Image 1 (cartoon, rainbow, N blue to C red):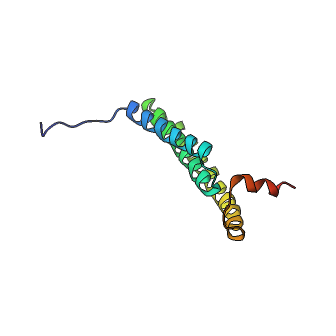
Image 2: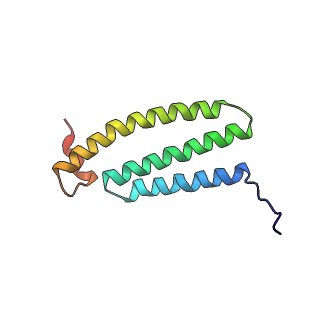
Image 3: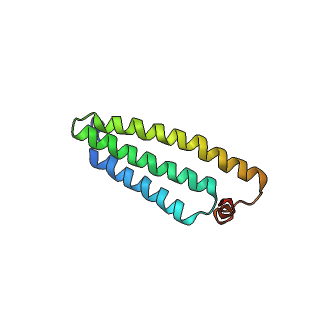
Length: 106
């Protein structure tokens, strides 16, 4: 019993990725706070990254990790721009709702 070692299979990682993506999608659809929605989108991106790495590892291919590198670069740029906009709007208004952001249309 003590010598039993459980090795996670790629299916475990894919199920974990599906659960994380589902949590992120529900968070985007249900929550109205832009900061929470932004974090849920990042959670969804990380779930997709986990899927890319898992499939790439299962197929013994490095392309999954290369795609993850580019997704992380785009996500970092998104964080810089999006978080800056969200924080500046939240400083000006106390109770920010996503529906209030429609006033930014030009």
